[in-house]
Image (tube, rainbow, N blue to C red; front, side, top):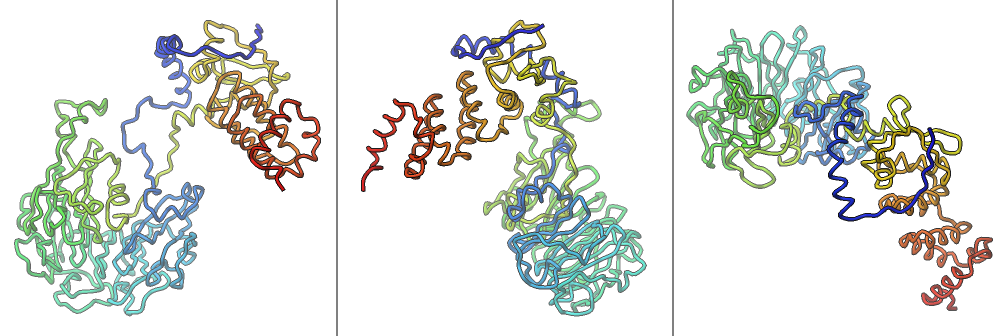
Length: 599
């Protein structure tokens, strides 16, 4: 069945608003049905659905949007957060930044503001990565190999020299039969953890941070022995000049510099070999994280303990006093958590446990900032946050601890190798864009110039006042449109799905006509912007005439100024010769007022 719809202005006001409110709830069910075609959840509360936005780190502003979309792993490092290494979906490795001490691994010390591919690691997949203050880089591949490069004044590259490494060097001494699973860097020393639970260390050792029992620098990897000899290590971390290891029994062993109590031994004396933290007796630790001079641990019960330097409140215990013994850190329960729809509290898993149980801790040896994430998805931060001292955990709006370091740490670095998982989840806007002109889901067809354009009544009624009225109680599924051309009407319907127009400037005049009739003011502005892009001496008068006809004042002023600036050529065109009498009269009068005819 066919009906004919003619464009015309619609009434606006309080009556319209009340009408909108009366039918919008019924339309919710219809729009949910449309979205279900893509299996979209109406409300997603899982933070895992949110992709990590690497663009929060300032260094990524040097990358194009296309390059950012390809990133799958990234690490921002350097004394000012001015260097970055990232991998792409194609398993290529790129670097970018100031290249201090050759830390980009490109074979030179030249800075680059454009991403350059690190060909020397071609074919290698990164498992983990850490960086020092020089900076130097320690990288482990998925095959368990170790590569290092960058600053090497203290032998922190482990290649037996003190020459800076301008390209990645494979470190095999004492590691040739080992598979490295985790790496950690202090300011100028390095640790690696192997698959069989052994720890190897090298580099700067002025405070015993290599754990060799002396203070002599270590030029090549050396296994850390002593108390760790018969232990299976599951996690390692480095502060500026100290080292930490968690063993499979939940005990924590520490060594190195202890001037701020960061070893948690109850003293301030340095420790040249691994020593167990006795104060954590009976507490099973799962993870350790080190800041510049403070330490965090996470227990198997989701509790956080902190110790060490506290001049910025980085321990999160409510004061700025250093602590040489582990102190518990408490996250204030967020009142809004209990109102979230999922996951629902149960007798075995009450809301209080979900809100306060910590599942991740974060710190970085180059910063005095701390962060943690709860099982309920809440992210807290404390310590030095953009120059402020936050002495208690502060609830943020972030969905991951990485964002804390991107937005509040000094410098803006990443505390770990970032992983950007591909997200196939479509937003509501993306889903609606895909449904435009889709005959498989449409319930309405527009016949224009003998061609069909497929649409959805519910969306048209939500998006356009004209359709809200014309489609009310309308059961017809075909609408014949003769007032506008196919390209123009198709562009209009597409705009209702996408909020943008894709139409050449010469066709946009027709869309401007439609927007004026339908009183679509935003569309009218978009049309004017598009038309401006296509103006030239030959069509300037025609566009000026259209702007006057459709009361497009911004476009009218633009076209008039263009004509004045190109007056000699414009007045010789056929458009000027055929100009409407009244328009010509007004044009000459206005041009005279702005001095266009003065010698």
